[in-house]
Length: 122
Image 1 (tube, rainbow, N blue to C red):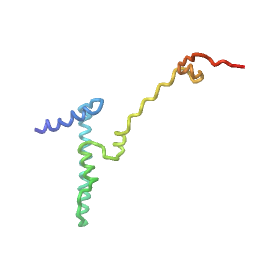
Image 2: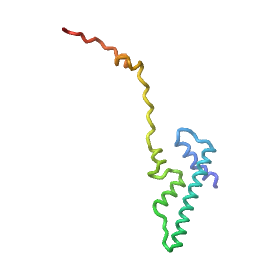
Image 3: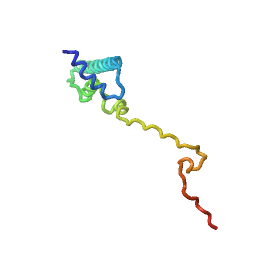
Image 4: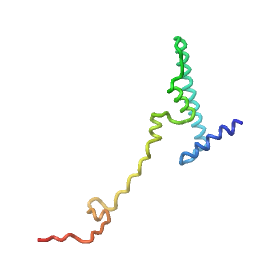
């Protein structure tokens, strides 16, 4: 029963990026995500224990809940550097430089064929 449940989220994750991820990359991502979740849970447990030692009530803040949820789902934290990079529009490719060297006149560079030259009048 666990194998299909574990594989169900993977195809949806693979369909989103343009390039397919290999099994090793997916496994590495999952391991990194698990490590992050464990780190966050350890941090919360440490803070809870410290609060209890000093006789203070401890409840998880909204930030703690969001951190844990984002770590579990593998999404970047809202407002984080990773999220900004993910949202930032891909840079547009630089336009190709126009034909012709810069010393040439504008008409030559832009392949303009002027119909008539201006005539000098005395």
